[in-house]
Image (tube, rainbow, N blue to C red; front, top):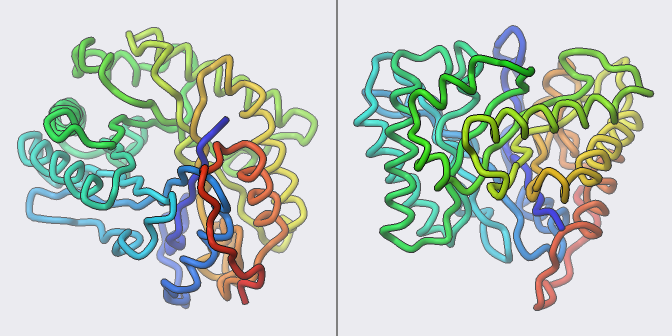
Amino acid sequence: MVTFGVWPGVVDRDLVRLETFIDVPPEDAARTTTALRELAGAAERFYVRSYRGYDIDGLARPATPVSLAPYVGEGRVADLVAGYSSSEADPDGYARWAAACVREVAELGGGKVQVCEELNVGLPLDGGRPGCFDAFAAGLVAALDERDRLGADVLVGFNAAVTMPGDPFWSTVRAHAHEETLARIDFVGLDFFPDVFRPVPAEGLRDAVRFVLRTFRESATGIGIPARVPLHVTETGWPTGPEHSEERQAQVLGEVAGAVLELAAELNVDTYELFGLRDGNSSGPRMNRFGLLHDDYTAKPAFDVVRRLIATHSPLATVSRPSTPADLR
């Protein structure tokens, strides 16, 4: 069984050129909650992902979504990405903030905290920030210690984008984080978007997914992260567009999830999260259309595909949930 999750925010920047999109419809918390409830169904646990960014002078990156509080409950729990956006090296300040993030998630009813975001990717992501690996190491220890101090139901770990065999990212992590710290983490996360930034022939999609997952697990184990530490797919998705049909999105998401689920037991994959719930602008550029829903909250075919995957492969709650409307319009 696998725990699923989704990011309920909307993409407001091109993920390649980082240009800001215009005319992004505002979030409707009530509609978002309805969609989350229907997607999660009777799942015992379902992650709702949020991104924050620490800066020495405060929060540089606005939180997306602004608050998780409206979306947690009924088995839905917080997945808080504690990004490191500092313009100056500040490992001590980041460590204090990472511990505060653990406390916040605990107060929301539990969930998980991811320390830093894609440290193997340069600016504007965390891997290009001054002192990022020192901050990562300090933040990881602080978050783990705070979790233990509270005895909280908060998982603590970190993630990376796709890595290839021999990637120096892993040795850099090992040089900064002590082996005993790596043995304490609750998960190691992978962000990957098969057939998005690099086209993959349809017939090779499942093999590509298998290769990436196996390589990632072997690399993590190679620096001392025990095989018992679960692998989380922390981001995956496939945006639609004029030459990228909604039907193909449903097929790709189903195939990628199928390949991951086939390897879940072998590689100890226990969490799978989608990026994201709703389009930023359904008439905008392709990179604005990762959603399982259009920007008006009507469902794409992929929404039902993912909903059925969750219903089939998630541990189910022992208490039935209230019925929910099927029409999201």
